[in-house]
Image (cartoon, rainbow, N blue to C red; front, side):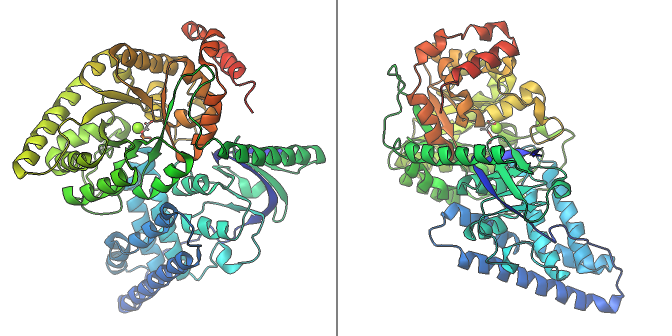
Length: 579
Ligand code: PEP
Ligand code: MG
């Protein structure tokens, strides 16, 4: 009998293959008290394991093909950098000395302390960065207890076509296994924003995460389907289920080939409406992808990644160099640089008081305005200088009060004066826009459009704040609903306010890159979509086969009813003829 296990699909695509359960993925770490005269030897053992872990990562980097995109190699570089950070190299040694304990336990204590810091972060992406801490520390712990590596380094030729099952996977291991030709992977833990999930999307590996109790239901060598679209893993396949998925894989391959032909086509609806497709990026290295899918520019550049994995914020010059690289690589296409969206009562080095409720705490623009001299002003100067070299727009995150716009604008003017005084080149007329991610800002959009040059709707936060649902919390994830009538009402309010004021409104949350919502958003008047580059051709495909006027006529008035069933039924009807 076919059994379906549910999780979170983190990358589109389906695969059929035999299961390979990774052993030793979960390590038993025990505390051992050591005599004082054994501590020096324990510290030496720790240092040797750290060196061995660095060698492992270097070996993985050496063996992955040169064609691997730089942003993907960057995941391993991040882990290598972490292995040089005093929080990993020094702090465990202090624990060994002060607690007279074994190195594995010292690392465990340090892991728990670092993870607590990440847990308090408000930004869902940064919160999942604790996975990196986990992966790095586990690699060293594994070497300390001489456990087998939980990956193909021990079985290099056996993974072709296999579906890997693990508690969790480190990006380095994922990359290695992709090189070995795995068909897909399933993990018991991990969320949609983890590095491994992002990697799976970038590498186009079918993957499902968060499948609780995985090991209880699946045996080594059993045939499985991984359905990354629907977040399902199927076991006990009968003939009909198998045939169904084989056909669906074939259709998927044909569709991908067909989508490729859209790269250079104009993004225009059947009734002649021109739509702008922009990309979201986190690292400048991702710019190659933008060219590959024909994006018209960058709609969201999340600059916080520049500030991560380091103890001090990058200064103005360092930021300028990075932004300039992005501007130059875009060759005249616009980039919307979002000012720092870091937060939850954390300074850059992770110290500082802990907020009672980080999601509602000191983050993004609030943090920037409070730490203007250290964080905001240098970034503003760097952005203004980069803007002298190409079309740069400055975007303020997490606005909730119009006063935040006014304060930010005042600071921007002061920094223009400072650059003027220094005789620097900069863009005096830079466009300043804001992200609408807080319901209050959406409701007050009519006020924001009077003082901003453009808006961008951040649905990831807007949905979580509107519905009071932490989407990283899988206990309440089922309530996270982009089609909730309240969410749609807010989106509509923002689009209407922008249109009435004659300023552009984009959407840069995940909703913009999900083809299920494209026709609905077009009908609501959205004309600029910004998304992860891998989603772009799929969205373009939907746009080019949509008649917006007809879509509107087919039932947009159901939004007025605020009735979720009618809205769902309408959206389903809209998508009926999609491939
Ligand atoms: C959003 O909230 O929709 C958004 C794009 O910002 P981030 O995902 O970086 O919080
Ligand atoms: Mg956001």
